[in-house]
Image 1 (spheres, rainbow, N blue to C red):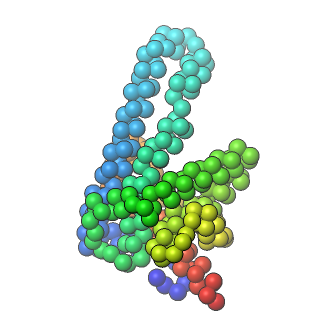
Image 2: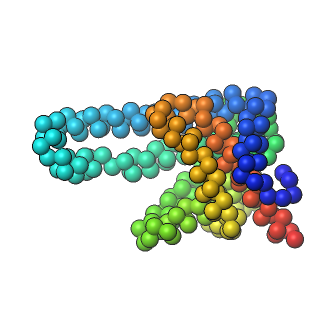
Image 3: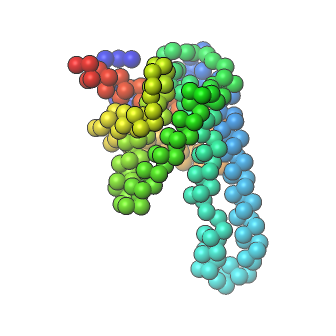
Length: 246
């Protein structure tokens, strides 16, 4: 990595370049297959649940009592819980791919086994640590949102690099816990939260496209987004480490 912070444009340009090095794009597409199938299964379940809810309430009743239907639908279809469950089910698969994308962003690999990438967290080094990290970070962010929206947003961005930090910490072979990862993420993101927000805002078109296509083409889109996020972390982490050594 360079000895200075890259701009958002540089991070995205580098991600595009790395995507086409060796077999990176093909391998990331294949590695994303299982997380994509998990997302598809939850999406199909959501559509089925919505159809069943509408059928039970009745189309005529919907037209006559739209407000009652909204309350009824909300009670039967808790999208937030379903999204959280999807995140938990896909946690180890998505983080395995994310860690591999970080290796690519750092120039460590230009080809890899998609099978090994997606299953690389199913071991004693990562499995339970990722589970506890997901639980604790979700709890902290949830508490922040319940207290006030702004603290929740700050926690979301401040703890957003915790998984990457955990990966780096565990790779050293030394004892490294989830609270250390959360603390490292918070310190690394000090002064960089707005940068990440603007970076994600610049990718808004991709997220809109994913939703417009009902996530059917996420396999083709996600590799680029994963490399951008991994590149951002590698960039701010390298800058943080330089400042610590100075």
